[in-house]
Amino acid sequence: MEDTKLISRLIEGQFPNYRQVIPQGYKTRIKLKTKEFFESVERASLLARVGTQVVRLAIEEDKVIISANTEVGRIHEEVPCYLSGETMQIAFNALYLIDA
Image (cartoon, rainbow, N blue to C red):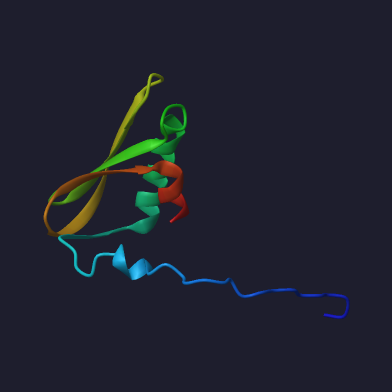
């Protein structure tokens, strides 16, 4: 790295304790095919981008229902899963979910 110069510095102060906001346990755990889930969320994000970019996940006994509703239309897809724990409903910004 002949002509490369790297400059850095330490951040001053105390780094926030991120472990405080991450729960130690869980009530719901699912296993699913990542690619199938990712593709379904991507399709839902196309509609979600028009509005609030929110996709909803309804986690049930044997499937995750991915949905988004906007003035342009709505999408409802089901991805098979294995559920351990409680059923639940949760919403995410589609772009953040895709990035993860």
